[in-house]
Image 1 (cartoon, rainbow, N blue to C red):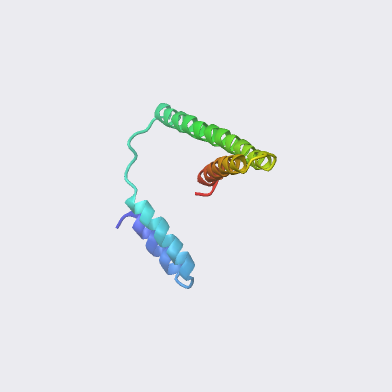
Image 2 (image 1 turned 90 degrees about the vertical axis):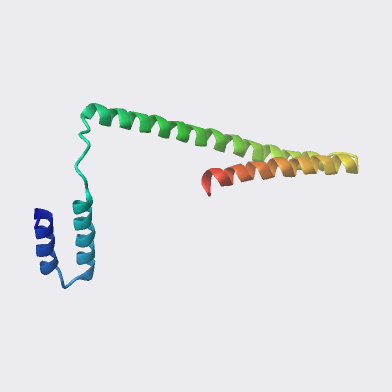
Length: 118
């Protein structure tokens, strides 16, 4: 019997009155038993991995901020097209500018949806 299994059986006997504690101990004991020995990572490798992940995350964050600002701006452009449509003199112009406004507004709202809610 390994040390982890011995500690687990002691904890199970001591905390058998509470199911939640036993479940937590089961999960922690299972993860301790399943863990394999490390692959001898040194500090230099860990720093390189962290640096790469930070660069990737910052690029993603900057991209999200950029596309959010751009899509909010295009929402305003779409609304401006609606205002412009009602100031035209012909029906064909009204329909054309309204369709352009719907297209721009819909595309920008869809981009915001993809960026933040999906």
